[in-house]
Image 1 (cartoon, rainbow, N blue to C red):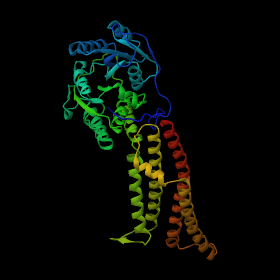
Image 2: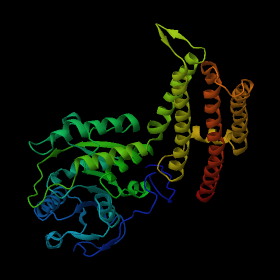
Image 3: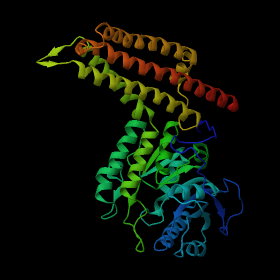
Image 4: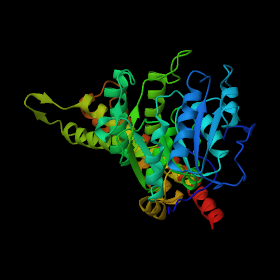
Length: 429
């Protein structure tokens, strides 16, 4: 169905450590007869942390949906340390309880999904904001061949938000903004990136190797599925008002919104480093073209200050581009992104030796320019110089020296990354 490369050595660039939750299956649903994946057509997984107000309602709707649709499935409650009787409710209603010790929304879902036995998985919250009677919409699209079916609560995607179900800032600012970034940066064909109700094949989940422990888990799934060309569909659903009374929602607007944006940035070296770096280099070159000859335009004199700022832009821009190459390489090595032929071409032509030689040449030229100024200074017995003239040597010389040192150091780092790529390629073969 899909062709993903699972490197099995890690995940996103901001989470290097193993974040897999600790899971222990403490109960089995009576009708379960097998412990192998695929024993059920569908597993409904709900993360749970003190959801006694609404858990029974959610489980009841899920059971009713399974029975009415004739779907052979199970309900898995991934409990994250509840103390309000949620565990007892799940057991009483015949759901399978999975104890997930590591805290976090993503950790709970990972624990529940990894302990599930369904060919397909539908995940959703246990706060009665999602109507589990709508699961047939997801199952139908999964049966038709979709790898991931994302729920859409927003009208733009055919969904509906009931009065009071979503804060105004979430509905009109946060969610549309993050969704726009997801569609623009990653080409994800959905209209509601933050919808927590979605369905996917267990095969896809296992190959994505998801690790995020928090709310960004759902975003990580969508981004990686899109990058690996998984078939993504959308199902319009209705969002209802949170039914919990005992405590407020677990979602924290600022904290979780920032985590999602941070994950977007760290997952996209192109937008975080490469393109901003190219813009800085372009502006720096324009600044040099204007300031070195001292161009005047409509009374504006581009001189030493412009030259200094342009040097800063060039140094920062080239550093950003180098960092983008490094992050892209690590992301591919760690399975976060698929292989990129352009990066293969880069490593085919770039080597420690070539980069070092180029850096040394630049270093000699830069230091030479600085030496010229020192020589001029000595000729006037180290008195004051004509800074308007000498800075045209000093600033470019210092800039070229800094960039050349960056290039030499980056060349050796590229050598390390190249060795890592070769090592991982050998392991995969």
